[in-house]
Image (cartoon, rainbow, N blue to C red; front, side, top):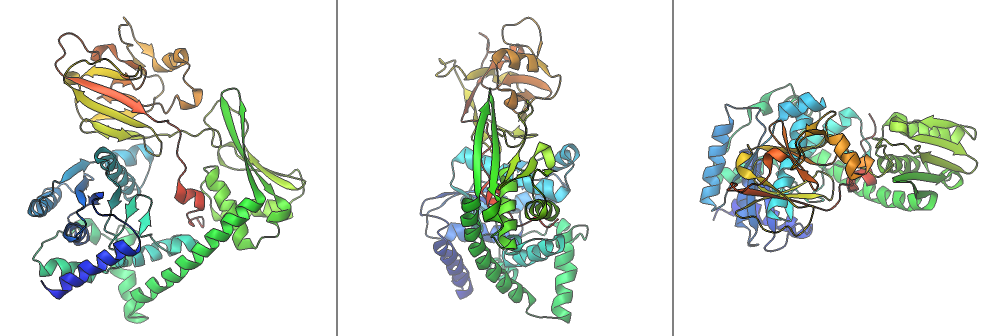
Length: 493
């Protein structure tokens, strides 16, 4: 074997061991795009003596219809040679952009990670491996620098972030391509990577070469060293912020009727003893706790209120959050309202799950898992929330989302339609959950209100040949996001 191949494999094995990314026998989703980095990642992971259970996944964003067949064929051939089965997950980036008013880059990233997580949940794998490398780190540094970021963001992507791992993050693009070239493994080049419409491409194609030519030929190495320094300093600041937060902040939960309220109090005397850097980080953490994306302006206004304003002054933030300064303390709160205000029990908004086939799916960001499993015969339900519908009447892909205003369905064994909002009232569904409670659709038709009732048109009858068994477990309440709760560092915008 070529020593360069051995060296590359040893480098990745060392990274995995050093950061405890994987254990022998782990199940792992590998995101593959057809590019050199993702194909190299798949090859090296399969070659490691860890007996990993790999599931390569290609997410089809639907943006380059002329290139996608070639990419899929390329990946299929490689997977076949590695004795692996490729999973293809289509997502509707353009539709998501249209509905949610997001940029193509942001929408593609969100849908890509959501699709990968859906497959991970379906296979019950441990983690998701993506192929970011050292050159991506350098590009990301300049993207965040130009947009305005604090230390945490400038320290770059993490080798491990929750279920996401980046085994190639310490390797550069040249080494990765060399690893494939030596083995005669072809890869594709995404044409969008050459478009200067995207900031990342302009940085890679124009800014970095100009800086290397005119100022520092070793720019990439210098930036990576700087990011390493920032990462260690951020780790120290993170620990100090946690200690400062615990010293001066108290989180309070209260209940009025069915509504749970959440507020935060800050001991202003202790807060004022902190250095500005720690005060900003404490306030950033508070903002994420209240689900208010922090910005430099918001952080500065709150700090100004605490440090200079008179008592009884109030600052109004987004979504009903009020910051009130009184003697000795600062109160972050929102009034009790019937609406789903941040700070009350939190539920997802605006999510959509595309269901390509039966399986298990999670409601993004929550502890709720929905099972859609094919069943050949009508078995007694173990749980009253389990539902069954006629599978032959469904047209995949299905859709799971929350309620839109005015939508109706025909309750099972009922003669006429009923507004779903009225049905929720009758079932005494928590008011805060009503817009978010998962509903299964086939086309534009309601199939089932998951956990409650089936639309009469899709009920199981004596002539039903195939059955879709619908289950749900867990709660719809949003889970805390560790990255947000500790602060993303991206509040200078």
